[in-house]
Length: 131
Image: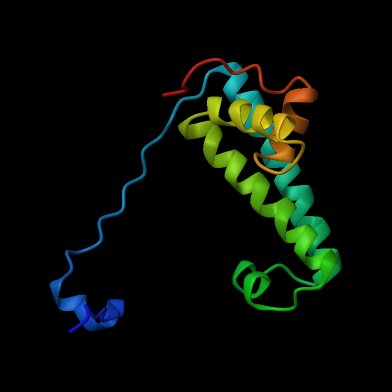
């Protein structure tokens, strides 16, 4: 007899799960980290604006479950690259530098083109963990 996998949904096991506890933990960023965060935030807002022009509205769920036109895919990639970069600034900004280096060394096959753009524009001068 072969092993079998049973796929259960969250609703199937809801009574066995602990309550969700949400916390907001403020993170004080140093000036270089704050500047980088604000640069990425502005880029993200611009990318969302561009995506809105292409699609007429911006709904992240619909974005991932709708048409896969090349212009939509490119806009989606720009938005998500910036979301990820924004998260990295508050968690581990050194990953942006690593990703930029990987993108360059792999000739665009791996890593992040956006991180490389940030680096090349002199925005990745954050050397330490912001926490």
